[in-house]
Amino acid sequence: SGSLLRWPQLNQVKSKSQRILVVGGGLTAVQVALKLIKLGKNVILCSRRHLVEKHFDIGLEWFDMRTSNRCISDFYHQELPERFAALKHARDGGSVPPFYMKQVRSAEQSGRLIRVVGDAQHDSSQQDSAGRVHISIVSSSSKKEEQRPKNFCVDQIVLACGIKPDCRANPVVESILESWPIPVHAGFPSITEDLQWKEDLPLYVVGSLGSLNIGPDAANLMGIRRAAQIVANGLDCRCWLREKALANPFDLLGDDSSDDESTDDESSYTCRDECCYNEPSRE
Image (tube, rainbow, N blue to C red):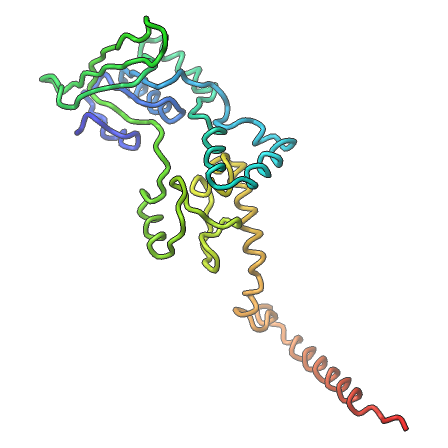
């Protein structure tokens, strides 16, 4: 229904909606909440745990040149199931940079934002005459005073939470899998060590889709840079294919001197052969 949206559908937020629930505990959820506040909305930000404030989702050891090579080496020497577990452990859920947390606190002080920790529950059939949805947020805390459900009435809900990896959900990836099938592990395609979709197929994978062969920083600039180097090395190893495309590489330069040189080389080579085969016999 129109009351439940995903974060890319912010353009479908109704102008008359005054109170909106944003579900998520990472940077995307915070950015959505701040965007709605700028549009004049009152926002309730619901997350399963308290917002984690840090500059990057993964540890600094993956970016520090003194330790990154060791992290990458350990990751590459693991089997695929262990790599997936390492991805989850390194990312450890979403995080919010200090720059955005400062805006979150400012919005809270102004009364435009309410942060609630817990699981949001609602029944889309339970709407009042104005189309508002009644929400109940239950905390998973062990403290009794925090276990009491908090009830809210909102006009719309925006989902900005994480999703389970599934490359098949992408129509482009699904069509590639149909044409060139390869194993899929934990939602990620099992590509080669050179980030190639499969051997003898000039298709390379970078970014989050190649996380199992790049590492937990696959979607960050450092991971993208490392992936680009791997792809470049793979393409360099295939440079021998240029000989098939360019029988005479000097043709591109418009230089015919190679023909003369090759003729001289061939004649001299023939001469050496003749000298070799016509060597006088020793009596």
